[in-house]
Image 1 (tube, helix red, strand yellow):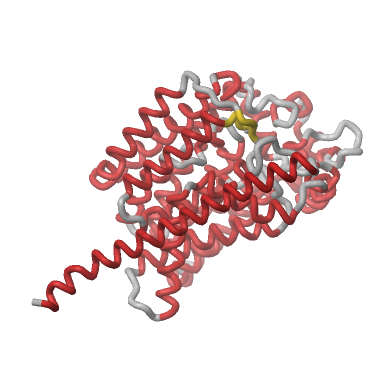
Image 2 (image 1 turned 45 degrees about the vertical axis):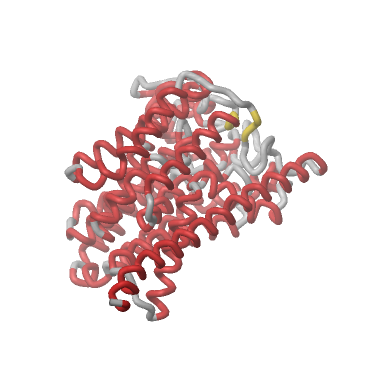
Length: 461
């Protein structure tokens, strides 16, 4: 009888201990944010070297409500109350459609808290953003050939910061939208929101292919209700996140279902990803872990890898033939970066304050989930009783995304504004929430964080 009682109580003790450790991790993350805010305010007030108004975020204190407030509250409440149950029982395709629609509603409603013009239509039309250079692409081939001549800040007619800081596929996207009759900030903003919301679907597809449907379903509500949505509407980085996410998702489908055309399309999207943002070359690490997790299948079907590489070559070859040199542009960008605020912002502060920004875009639930993923992988390596291979595979996937983010951090090329810049990486940290118990409570914490951020601060992006 004693043995039975002890056996029955053991899972309860384990769950309680796990939850306590989750709360410790979440508390430590909250302290990191507080430290970044307090130390950041001191540095900005006394040294004026951070170039942000509300460190560690590029935002200003401005409590407000707006037309999106009722919708945001409704989406949050519905997702917390019904999200886990619906994710568990909806047919898979219906779940994907529901996740995309819900993610779109969440991003859009948060953006509309700032109003249509401030929250969406004007986001991409500031002097820093891509729509300012539309008229300079009248002759696209000539502009691409001349692109690198305008990166440095002392060059004639230099590009504004975002255009200079990215390969030309980023501004070219909005040039093509304009030529398709979808010109102006409103269309550009909605493009980023609607396309960016598909990143949630792509991550779900990849997690299901690599770690099984059960974990993907558990992660779904957290991908929908991500605090990152505060910066996804309307930010070009949300669009970048979607392209990168679909590159990984299609690769996962290609190697698990042995679908050759998906391998080629994945390579094409990886190539586009690298020409949307220099920093997203780190997504090669996430692609590599997908191949490693399915190495036996890749060995059996080498054509998958061949078509992936063939697809990967298309975008770089096209831009190179058009006259744009990626490597030369990146070297010039490094110089331009240190000519501006990047050369003044202190590395010693931002190298850890960036992680506080990551806590704010991923949420404390993700921190707790990453703690569980780390414990799971440590137990697997150490020979402790593990949870299933699917859990280990998901743990490796989110850990690789975290490693890529840390590599970007240590590079010193992402000092501040990482709440926007690291959106593509944040999407791959969120699936760690599938390991959590009490999902509704954690979803409530995620939603509350996003709502507080969007209502208390006026974000620049």
